[in-house]
Image (cartoon, rainbow over all chains, first blue to last red; front, side, top):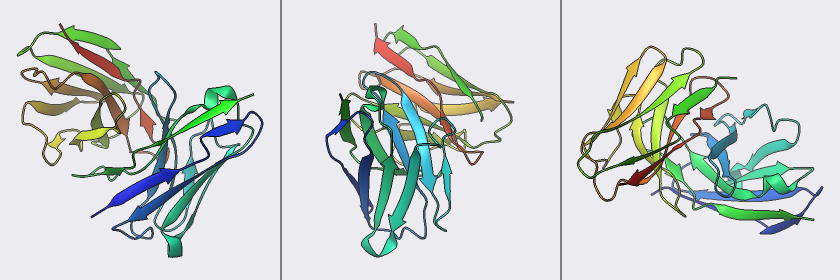
Length: 116
Length: 107
């Protein structure tokens, strides 16, 4: 059965770099793309980007200059890295397999607070 | 980038009432449209995929439709467990986008 779990630092200082890890089980990262979605407190969902099964990536245009998504297939882990953090990057960060099909899979999300 | 304009931003409805939420795409996205329900503190749950297909385990009172670049989610008879925030998501282009969300409350 598919499971996804995000882990992150909890608190990050402004101007620093955020690293969040998504650990998956029940499927191969070479078979499905993994998306990153975030949600600021009281705000809507924001699609951040995806690493596809072939390892290629696409990023939200507004975040592209600061965002990188990578993976380690041997460890079934996907990594989100975002630099130059500001307070408005405070959010719950989710990893998800979004198939546009009959099922998809989300992690529980990890809260990241950016503070000066 | 494709924009998804969702309306209304919020609505209040009574039990058993029919509720409709719409998303307008800024360009053709075919049927690459999904609808989600999110409850406080929880991850989004898939309701509809392919614009009109019901996801596994979703009650049949939920339905999706399409007219050109306008997409609608209909709840035929609002139930006590249906309040939450609803989002559309387009997956047509390489860059996916969510609608702004609709907060549904019980009157």
